[in-house]
Amino acid sequence: MQKRHSGHWNFRCLLVAAIISVALMSPPSLVSARADLGAAANSVPSASLVGKGRLTFLGFKIFDAELYAPDGTYSPTQPFALKLTYLRNFKGSAIAKRSADEMRKIGASEGQLAIWSRQMETIFPNVSAGQSITGVRTSSGNAAFYLGNRKIGTISDAAFTKHFFSIWLGNRTGNPELRAELVGAGL
Image (tube, rainbow, N blue to C red; front, top):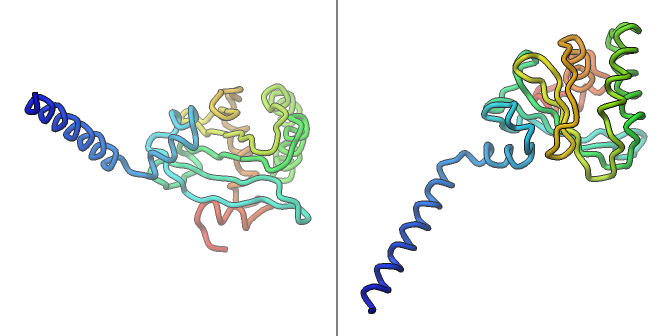
């Protein structure tokens, strides 16, 4: 009876050791990126954190931003995910309006903005402090959006994708310090 118990115990030990060794072989950044991005991670192969930062306005904390890209290397023409975790409550319509205002500053036309504003208003929900919206630049150049782990919409327009993500990641952003923190570039 004792031998049988020992054999069972040895099997358990081997099983636990095998599980631990498999977990140790997965890069920690890939594991945490999958957890941090949820369903959005499926659109960014080998997602890994590139950089993160916080947006404040007049001393008020607005959101924390995290940029994920394949193997931690950001390229505006490749898939990436930008996760914004809001630190205050915002109406979806206010998020859409502010996004349109920022895209206007970096060169979007009024005609484009009229179309995009309507699309963003239907996608962006009201958010409470602590909720995250993740925007993904897909491999096909579209913009897909997630609230937490749930996909909330897609805008299939490469010009929208470029202008939208340029709000935070473009050279003409109104927040160059945040951009530098996200893409890992010095000012």
